[in-house]
Image 1 (cartoon, rainbow, N blue to C red):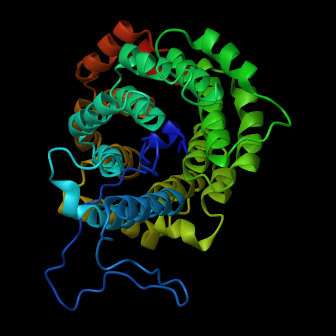
Image 2 (tube, rainbow, N blue to C red):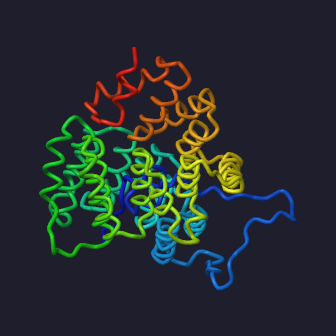
Image 3 (cartoon, rainbow, N blue to C red):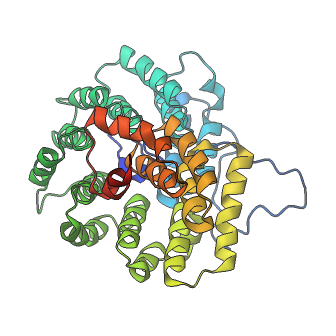
Length: 387
């Protein structure tokens, strides 16, 4: 079965197909140096059963690893990615592991922002089976994260005839919307909506993530405001959609509403991306919880200790908007831009460069926009002010 989730979740949530939620998380295990250190307080009744060793066959191990990846996606908890990798350990370092392991290795490498290695794995997989729809969709997503739009669009086109027509059509529309054809892509994606037609939740979430972001990029604020509640009605548990809606509300000064979106239940306190947006909403309201701010800061410190580069985007935003350290935010945003080119990556680098009084530092983003034709109404204040 083709597994998808919103590449939009890549506003920090793992953005591959088997799209495990980035809200920027890698799978590197953390090893404490103090035996007395408390790593977590686990609520009673919520202790998960985690396999102590990989199943004997690669197929069984891959099935278990995929369930862990899905759990990371649904809970926003990066530790499940580490558990998934541990299930694949017997085959992880093979030059050519079995196909089920190869696909998940590519997915996990993407989660660690090891994009070149992920593409290498997908290339091996597709060389052996050029009709593997999941591999083509994952490849399209990775290329999109890298801003390599012609290649991403070509990968989308390879899905035609391999799966439901909706999938390649949405995949192509999404890439068109990022590469100079926003108006046409918006018309195309609107035509894909089929009221009354049941689709898998993952496909519905993906559709709404693409549609709402296209509306935002096109400057259709009222339409986006109406679309987000519809999106969450279809996919209420999609962390990427909730984070994106919170960002939209924060952009328009609706901090109280944003706070509701990101604090729906107790589990949200464990999701770094939602926790950051909760802090940003509190800051707009003028009532920052010091313990929350400390928790967010501790999360980034732990990520650095683990060497998790996928946190760079979120950390740059925290440093810029919460700590007000434009110089440090610019450094982080530049590091992040060297790794990936997505809408929020561009926005952060432009914003940090402007705040630091160094507009020339964002020339690479402006050059990228000129080369790709990328359109985004949210970037106009930064671009208009640039020399």
